[in-house]
Length: 153
Image (tube, rainbow, N blue to C red):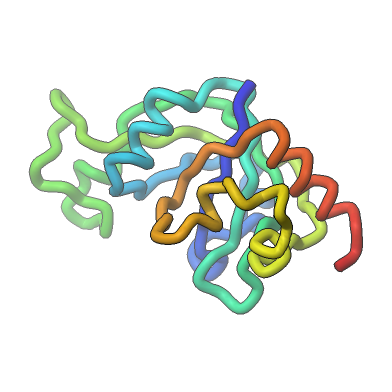
């Protein structure tokens, strides 16, 4: 099993939305490196931190699990979708998605607390220039963020 962090803007799709839907596709990834991580790295049973970005309270807010491995993102074929890609076709899809299932909310762990924790200095999230929406998390980093969630700041 591997661990991941996936960013989402809560105004668009939040941990509460995932909880309500129970299972949701993770569509709209339009970065080749992030796509490759979903396609080549994510497997059934992998755990995912849900991270709210582009909002007042940026940080880790919950956990999901990969319940369906990579498959073509059908929005790339829909001209009405914001994720439409005219260079992609069903015979040669460019973009993929995975399905996530809600597992639990966590006590919010802010980006500021993550950055201040020396045990997390190698987490891609805090690396200068890292803007990926999907990133791997090591076992030790996962355990540290879980521990931070269990403690009050």
